[in-house]
Length: 379
Image (cartoon, rainbow, N blue to C red; front, side, top):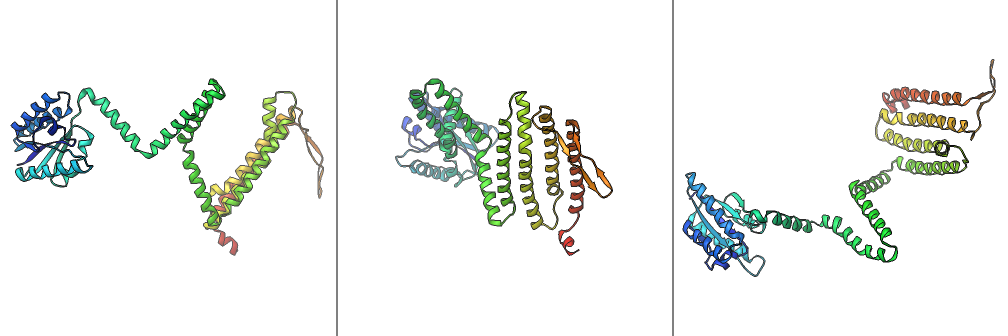
């Protein structure tokens, strides 16, 4: 025989409702079984499974293949009992028909679990799952929920926060009122969604791993990062103090300018300290340092000069800082008289200094990136 079409009933409903001993094989025997099961329970999806097995067998025969149809049904009180009963029935069918392959017809995901048992004994050409149209959405939803509840990660991500919300919400309603309770729960849910959506947990885990690796490998950058964090904190604190001293005027613009004016030097020092650590790490690990690492300190300094110049311009125009004064300079025969710069001249000076620092950084980076540090030390 070429193909045996096997209808599988793992729960034993077909045998119990029809009262027929299993397995059942042969076209006429299976047709009679359909009538018995249909009369016993017309709503049973097993009827559709039996009819589908007959249809597949008919199509195979119409295609000039030697095919027959059979039914196996197992039931037991133990966990492995149904599978053992189905295996024994299948062995009997294979000994009787000796098919080259089988086509398995099932009507549920539970019946489909028997497929590996069948595959261990004979070649399986196809698995045909029958779903009744009226029950398709309900059954799909059921198995999706079952799969969801079986996934530990999904349970922890969704069910645990939902349970906490359901426990905390009534307490908040009793003590703080409806509006505050809804606002608090909404804020917590929003933070949880952002935490998962932005991958904060993965980022923190990766950051801790990188920090541990940096400490164990003795990188200089870990020290400079700490120094940079301290300097950045000082810069923010200095900016806040400067902002609090403003009185009157367009507070929003002047407050931003005052914050930038006071904090930029410290923030620039923080960034320079961090970039210096990365630069030293690259110099220690590699014989050459990449151009981006060399450009970074000069870029930071140039940006700091430009921001400092613009913030000073706004504060000076608002009469919150005094004018910039250049001292009297004597260099040999060259004498430079003391100057008081106007706001626009002060801004132009800082912008020009920023551009100059940037150009110098480009030239230095081009020179050093093409130079071997060990060769420079030998020279």
